[in-house]
Image 1 (tube, chains in turn orange, brown):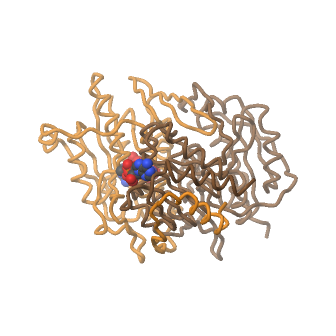
Image 2: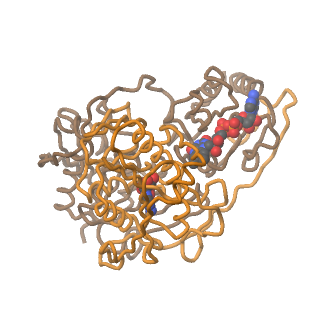
Image 3: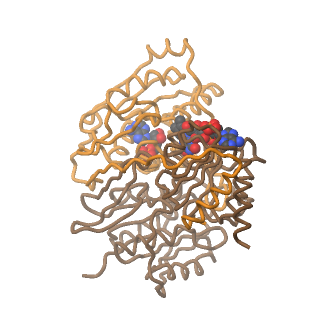
Length: 257
Length: 325
Ligand SMILES: Cc1cc2nc3c(=O)[nH]c(=O)nc-3n(C[C@H](O)[C@H](O)[C@H](O)COP(=O)(O)OP(=O)(O)OC[C@H]3O[C@@H](n4cnc5c(N)ncnc54)[C@H](O)[C@@H]3O)c2cc1C
Ligand SMILES: Nc1ncnc2c1ncn2[C@@H]1O[C@H](COP(=O)(O)O)[C@@H](O)[C@H]1O
């Protein structure tokens, strides 16, 4: 069985993430680029399944700028077998329609039984790419899973919905996305890091995939970008035994209670 | 010219009621054109829901009832929407930005070749069409987007739109379900959540009280619950509090949880990590209680109290009770 994991490089949320006010694109210099934490949990789920089952191969798939290559090497060190990177200047500022088309095309090209992704990316917060891919490749989807069980022919997991929890099951091929309720990613050991240097990493252009980013299909376009005014610190008091009372007065004064 | 149709997904709760997001979805739809509500449920559940949709401004409601809705993930809803899209050619499709809404938006966008605007916090119309508003990087940037042409599929962030539609008596159309793709995921079990809370929903509540790791234990977290109840507030939590098991994940505020923008946000024992601020920093007034004077939450708090929550909060609750006989 071949599992493809969709890994994404994002601006580090611990840093100051910035958008360029003219182009609306992420400013690369503003923050470090890191593997989106939720996609590292997706890798962990795939790799730990590969360790417990026979004949499971894990491949990483990403679409992103050149810097994504070192992210892929680091992630290969967690135990994945190979990596596939779509790198093309035509992808700068790609909307979700184009991103899903590209990722679906690579997945179809390499072939896989199961795709595991994160539920929502921390920069785009779209949460739609996995199911868009499922629709494109004709697979089932089971998204936002808080638990995941993989067998040779199916996947099962729980998702939180309104009013309760549902258990869903999909036959392979399927696309699943996982939440941060899944176990944290492992730290790669020295052996893993050395082995990762020799693992296959393939790069694709849009032409390789037969995709024309200028095709006349509806696209989401950015109209404007503005920076929200930063919040500032207000009053700060130290409790001297009456802070509860003072807070009550403050709330009453401001008509907040 | 007749008003443009805005197809609006109205999920129904297991109780038969419309989900809380229906009011703002139909409000946003009314801002843009003529709202057409779409209800897809198991048999016997749709009638009452369709009436409520009218009260929230849906002039027309398309209703489909089928057993498969309870056993097949997303596909029944996608099927009903695809047919509605072909019949009506709506200018926009509005769905809640929750896990079911996103799956519907994703499949429908590929099936109908429409662009998506995801996690939208507001909408308006200009001469060229519909404009979607987004709040990016934890509310530090605001952007606007549109589609080059065709229908725009919008996933609307819960609690973001205040506009409400006018009550109408809805015209109800019953529709049939088509054939579903055999590979769709199945729903094999449903368990209702035990604590059906009487507190206001975190997403829309005007006041939110949130507890962090500083509350120390599940028992300690009860302090946040008491304050929430004293104020009639929604309850939230930091990721550290959720990870420690003090509160369910559905209450997590922040980058990977819920984003809220209440009038008042009270943070108890929360340090103010950037990923937490991402979910609450557009609150109108922020109050923080933390015993560490250097806690970053104080950098964004309108009123910061350096103190022990277990001393400050009980006194606050008592003082408020004394004020209100
Ligand atoms: C990718 C990613 C996504 C994340 N997403 C989220 C998210 O969605 N939401 C989120 O909240 N976090 C998120 N985090 C985690 C975030 O970085 C912090 O770890 C988390 O917010 C810390 O929670 P906390 O403030 O409750 O705990 P801590 O940072 O441990 O703070 C506890 C605070 O309580 C104070 N305290 C202790 N005892 C008392 C007392 N008796 N009285 C008063 N104060 C007291 C302490 O001084 C301290 O400041 C994310 C992290 C990453 C990497
Ligand atoms: N450019 C990308 N490369 C690889 N995976 C991606 C990319 N964009 C999105 N994904 C995957 O889709 C998930 C949800 O992303 P999104 O729909 O953008 O919120 C992410 O957690 C990733 O697993």
